[in-house]
Amino acid sequence: MTATPDGIVLRRHLYLEQRAWQLYFRRAVIALLAVVTLAALLGAFGQEPATTSARSARATLTVASPDRVRGGLMFTTAFTIEARQPIDHPVLVLDGGWFDGMQVNSIVPQPKDETSVGGRTVLTLERVPAGGRQVYYIGFQVNPTTLGRKTQDVRLRDGSRTLLAIKRTFTVLP
Amino acid sequence: MDIALRAAFAFAFLFLLTRVVGRRELTSLEPFDLVLLVVVGDLVQQGITQSDYSLTGLVIAVGVMALLTVVVSWVSYRFPRVRPILDGEPIVIVRDGEPIEHNLRRERVTLGEVQAEARSQQIASLSEVRWAILETNGKISFLVDKP
Image 1 (spheres, each protein chain N blue to C red):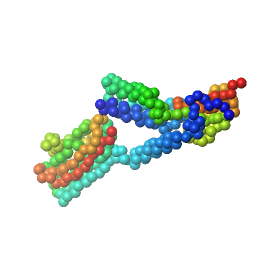
Image 2: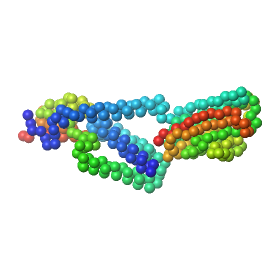
Image 3: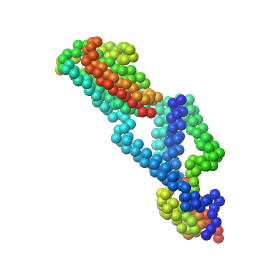
Image 4: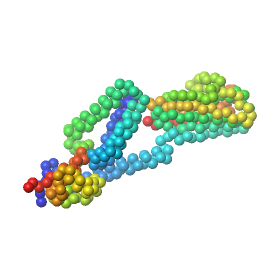
């Protein structure tokens, strides 16, 4: 039997007494990393497009847009209006959460008018005839410092009369 | 403030990763490991500075990393009880020429790796080795019988 080197304690460094927790800790962290990876593969961390619709006798409004993104990501939102009866003065009213902490890269096609009322963005669109369908695309990019949950409600109005409303929440992960 | 918090989180995350990944993996820099190191560096940079190309951002991010390195080092020096958590502990893998299978398995080190490391230190056979110790930096120290 040979002398133990300086700084080596056999109970601790050979027989690993009182060191079992280190192994369990390592395994727990690796398991956590595996769970995070699996959750990412299942889309838990965003950018998957989500589609929300509202329907009435006069029209259908559909919003296709991710409801969970990460800072710095670019994405496109599509607002689709399908009219069963003519909508003479279609107006989209977007909550402040659509633009707060976001960059707008483009709006296609351009609305007739853009204004802000009570913190909401109001887009005045072209007339939609009965049976007509209009799609408006907005290209966004999340500001890298934006974080948290926002309300992204959407209302479709004909003039001042609300036809449809969609309630959405939007989460920006760090 | 945002960039400082990101840098601190990245530091803590990388510190945790290096503690759980395994010390041998971190010292053996095969070509693939080298490429991986560069890729990880790039990914970490994007997460910390994002679209900030300023010198101010650089100073904050690197400053936070340097400061935390000093803090970890100081805590490790000042509080010996915390040292095993921060620095890890050596582990005996060969005693009197006999490999300690349980410890090798725990550190995911194969007997072949130990033998290769021994050869690189002019030790032909593990039977000559009194102690082989996997150090906290991932290197293997061999103590042999003096002739």
